[in-house]
Length: 207
Image (cartoon, rainbow, N blue to C red):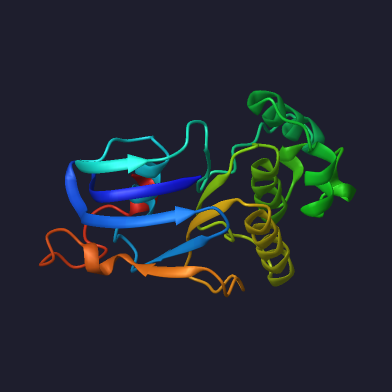
């Protein structure tokens, strides 16, 4: 199981933002993407997830191997915590709902509708979807937004366990998640049109 990115270039709003990106992530490893706002972290993750094509280069990954957690939590507001997880488990043909509830500390919230959760609780539920995806490679875009310190540590433990089980992760984050085995890749070295300052134009979160 391996994700291989070869000489990839990506664009946001038709404007190239990254070029010549080469990376590989294999079973049991994690990669943290770093760089200033607007550098193209979200755009690259969307490309790896298959949501937009690269301008050039190739992305090689196992079929049905990717789970993508973006800025949105991907929740149905009228469903409870448990119902949301059962929905995503059924979409992916998986089980493990009770384990996901336990591991993301959602037991006390299991019967609460997503609409009535706090921002941090919604984020934990959104991340719990990864645990019922059955996918080996997790692509995570600022996964700790709205999480308190205890929840960040909880999530880091979940990621580390995923790695121990043979999974892999690519994460865009500005904070230290407490995963020392993760490698770090600064995307500044791959900036296209290097005369344009990072952050110029639209924020990548809306790409």
